[in-house]
Image (tube, rainbow, N blue to C red; front, side, top):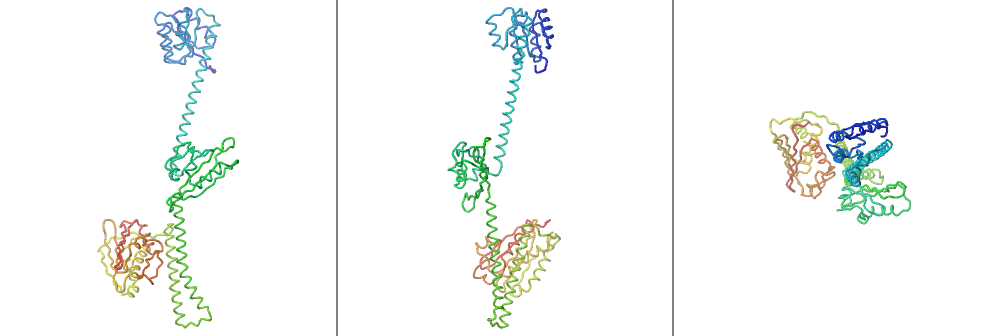
Amino acid sequence: MNGKTAHILIVDDEKGLRYGTQRLLEDEGYSVETAENGEEGIRLGTSKEFDVALIDLKMPDIDGMDVLKEIINIHPNTICFIVTAFASYDTAIEATRIGAFGYLPKPFTPEELIYQVEQGIRQRELIIEAERLKKEREANLLELAFEKSRLNAIIKSINEGVLIINRVGEVAYYNYAALKYLNISDLKISEPVLYKLPEKISDIITNILEKETFSLKTITTQIEVKPNQELVIEAACTPISQPDGSLAGVVVIIGNITDFKKIELIKNQFISMVAHELKTPLAAVQGFLNIFLDKNMNLSEETKEDYLKRSVVRLKGLTDLVNDLLDISRMEIKTKQREIEIIRIEEVLTGTLQFLEFELKKKGISIEQNIQPNLPTIKADLNEITRLLTNLLSNAIKYNKENGIIKVEITTSSNYLNIKIADTGIGLKPEEKNRLFSEFFRAKNEKTRGISGTGLGLTIVKRIVDSYYGKIDVDSTYGEGTTFTISLPININ
């Protein structure tokens, strides 16, 4: 059998026939074992698998049919022959029903025996090959099932939506992300789908399917699925070809680009605001310089000095704006180098108040301090903490009333150092409070006219506080004043 020696079992109570048959088959190159009765035949035939078994029908202890049943029950692929001198039509049918391959009547010639055994071995080879092919096919089908399952799991788990449409516009495959991004509640395989898709996608797919020739070129489009940029997608439509080069359908890969669109909008708004903030002081300075250069203008020295002072103020505001923008940019991309050191907040406060002393006296503003004794130190960048206090106190001065008061309170609670700065100034309207930390926001009302600033100071304060995992709260009443409370973790790394 395929180069291997066939193993044959002979079960017969006639000693002479048993040994004679054994010698004949061994001379043909077969491996042969014998059993002298039915009981031994069952023991041998069930203990290991033989290729062919020759079983005598009539034996004194156990009938050959019973031996056949036991062997076939354990090893159904063993080719069994019933050997008997009492052949009949009924016994042949019964033996075949139980599982015998053939009948070998006694007495038989050596040629008849060899021929039947060879036929049995060929049948055995066919059975074994069929079993092998069956297992291989089952293994392949199982592997295909596993592969399909893995592929489905992968496609269903990816963030992009996947939608496959056949050449007649029906759904061939989809994942749940596709339903979500297309804002479709349900799809069914083989269901017509083009009418459910956004018009732009449907038109692209229809154009691909209706063309006589096609190229494997991807066509992309961006669609606002939900209004106000709540959901914006990018769909990439690519033809799918058959092995023979004909069109099989279209695969649509759908990506959620809502966040990118929002960032793009914010970036455009930011650029617009920056351009506006830069344009105003530059236009003012340019106007003053044009007046100076106009020989027809007879300016007094006093007027010239006034124009120069205004230009300096405008240029200083421009410089402050550029510096604030640079600081925000560095914080955003985390390139600003920090020098972490042990800081005493009360010392920083004292230095900041000294720096702002001129502005305080100019408006007649008094400072009331309530500093908890023995404050813990913090680890932070001195420049950042100084900038934080300077911006808050500068705002408390600018937006305060003449001869107003600024109350500074520093305490601790749990693991936080709390800095409270309250003024008796203009205060904020509720709608202004919600936008307080936005870039370039400045409260604009009848009381803030003439107050200069970049509109970035509090944005920088918020980013500094956030960078130390702190908290900032605002309490304000329009016409009465504003209170900022900063909480910085004491154990700042």
